[in-house]
Every structure is written in C-alpha cells, then in structure tokens.
Length: 336
Image (cartoon, rainbow, N blue to C red; front, top):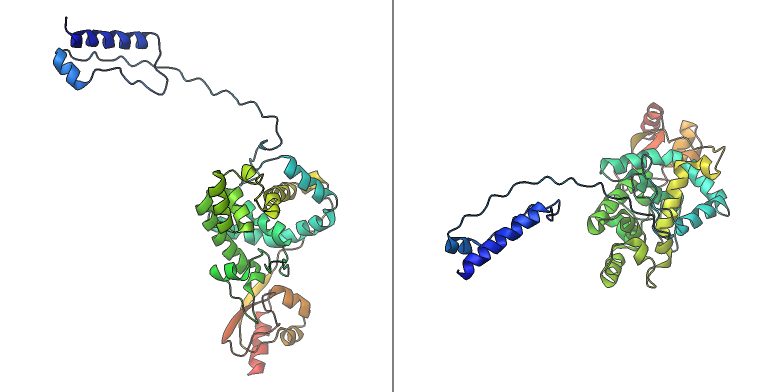
C-alpha cells in the first residue's frame, strides 16, 4: 500500500472526526484537504463537506476592573467624545465644586453666549461638538485671556499657529480674539490633529502641548493611550491634567445642578449685524453717534486692538448692535 494512499485515508478520517465533534470554530469552516498534487497522485476526489451551523454565544460582559484609570461612563445620549471617570477627573470635579467654584460659575454663565456658534462650527466640519469645551478650559470663554506662553483669545492660539490657520495678527487687529474666526481656525486645527493621532484625547492633548511633541512621545513610548502616556515622567505636567480637566468641565456643564451650580445667570447669546466700514472708522465716535455704550461696541469687536480701523485699510467688517444698520449708514455718509 503506497505512502500517498495512506496519507489520503488519514486526512479524510481526520476531517470526518473534526466535523463530527464540532472542532471547527464558528468563524471558520475550512476543510482539511489534500493538496492538489496529492489528490492527483492518489486518483481520489475530495469528499464534499457538509456545512455545520454553529450557534454563536453572546460575548460575556467583562468584569469592571477595580482601578481608578479605566472606569468608562456611558456617554449616551449627552456626550459625543469618549468620557472616562477616574480619580483624576474626580479631582477636577471637586476642584470646580470647591476652590474653583467662583471661576467655573463664570465660565458656565458665559458659555451660553458662545457655545451655540462654537458647536455649530464644529458640527459643520463633522467634529464632536463637545470639543467646544476646550475653549472653556483654555480661556473661560474670554477674548482677552493671555497665557504665559503668549497664547491669546478664546482658543489660546500662539501667533504662529494662529497665522498658520488663517488668523490675521498685527498691530491693529488680532483675530484670535474674534470668537467666530478663531473657532473656525480651531476646528481646522483640531480636525488636522485627529487625522494625525486618531484619538480625541490625544487630539485635545496635542492641541495643548503641540503635535510635534506629542508625536515624539508616542514614538518613544510606543503607545497611543493617553492614560498610559500621561503617567510617563517626560509627559508635560499641564497636559497630564488637561484631559481630566476637560472631562470634568464637560460633565459639569451638561448637568450643572447635579454638581451644585444652581441659580445661574446665563449670558444671552450675542445679537448683532455685520457692517463693512471704511478705513479710518473709530468705534468710540461711532458708539456716540449710535447712542450705545462704547464698551458694548468694543465687546462686539474685541479683535480691534486700538478701537479703530486704520485709514490704510480699504474696508473692514465689524459687528454692530442688531437693527442699527440704517444709523451706521447715516454716520458714514456724514463722514464723507
């Protein structure tokens, strides 16, 4: 009896045994077959296999790990970024409830004026709307916030990054202070960061520390897990707290009463019209003519550093109180 014939009989017997006792896994019905050359030598044709339906068992629920680092919170229906609750997040929640209560209360009240347009801008670029809370922890929704690193405005752009994303910055104008233009720039930057890192935690962290440094740390430590990276000794201290601080801000902002923030006085969303004015327009003189508070007109146009449009500029679009376009037209005609 030839060796080839014996091998043929052996493999057929093995295949029948495996099929009979269900040893093939649910993801595979691969047959145990002879090679084409062996079949040709033996003169035998393969036995057709009978499909066996194997019922898949529902995956068992994983037991929650008893650790402070990985305790996921159900993010539906209120969140569109992943939400993790751990000791770091808990620390910042308690901070905002305690010594940081006064400041966070102001942020919450201001947020009503800015979140609608910020969230809408992010949504237009298919980005999570909860990234708007990056502006909350960066600046407290203040146009005049300036960091020790000279980052400016709602989204705390440094000059080089702001200009890279289309913001005009010079002696008379700083569009980092314009909540609409800076949000467009921030959404573009955040979108680019997500393309680089594929994680919303790393995206927000890189927004804080810079994409170059984040890339080097990922390469050095061989992980894209923020919580693991943040435990490394060379991970920036500020950024280590950044994601927990952001998550705490998002969670409190979604349900402020639950966290003790009651009787808030939310700031009304801005109501304004746009108007193109010529170079040489001074906001103080315009406010007097319109009989509005100069400070209020300045609040609508915080990007105008000197309070006027230089005469060297042909035209510039400013914000004016809603319904006052006819009076602005009259003012400008009077200046001719």
